[in-house]
Length: 257
Image 1 (cartoon, one colour):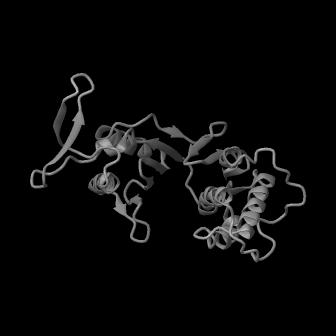
Image 2 (image 1 turned 180 degrees about the vertical axis):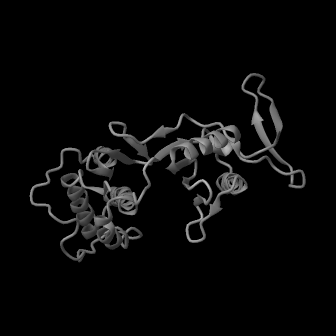
Image 3 (image 1 turned 60 degrees about the horizontal axis):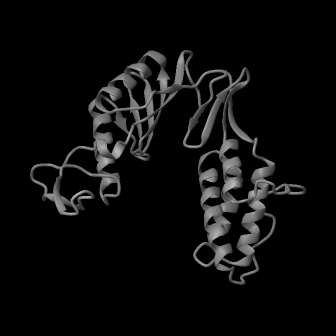
C-alpha cells in the first residue's frame, strides 16, 4: 500500500528450497561431515558436506548472507532501519524479503527485469502479479484490487486459524472489541489450556504484526501471560479469537488516486 505511479505493479516470487541455494562453504572454513547409515548395506558412511542443509543451525543466516549481498550487487540499496527491504534508486523497484518470499513493487518493465535477474541466480517458482480479479497471497496476507482501490485482507488466515484452534463454529454474538476488561484471574491454567494460549497468541501476533493493527493492544496484554498461562489469559484470548471471527472481513486499503 502507498502512493504509486501509473504503470506500477506488485509482484510476489518464492525462491525454491532457498537454504539449499545458499553459497557453499568457503575453502578456508573447517570441513564438515554427515554420518549416515546406508539403508541397503547397513554400513555407516561419511560424506563431506559442501553446503548447508535444512536443519543446519547456520542455514538461515547463511541464506541471508547469500541473498542480501546479491541484491546489493545488482544495484539495490539495503534499508538501514529495515535491513530486509531493498530499493533500487535507478529502476524505482522496492523489494521486501521474508526468508525465501520476495514482494516487489515498481514500474512493470523494471520489476520484470529484476525478476529475470533473480531467476538467473536462483531457482524460483513462477512469479505472480497483482491485478483486478487476480488476488495475490503473500505470507497469509491476501492483496486484491477493485474499482475502489487496493486492499490487504487476513480473512483466509483467520479462517485457517479458527480451524486449527477448533473454533470454526464459535459464536460471535455481542463481541465488539478484542479485549474488554483487565486480566485479573491469575489462577494457573491447565496444561492443555496453556498450550492453547501459546498457539492462539502466536497466531494473534501474526495478525497484529501484519494487517490487523486493531489487535495489537490486546495481543500485547495477553502475551504477558504466555510464560505462566492463567485462566484469565485463556478467557481473554478466546474473546480475541471470537472478535477475529466476527470481523474477519476487515482490511487495510488504499483508495485509488
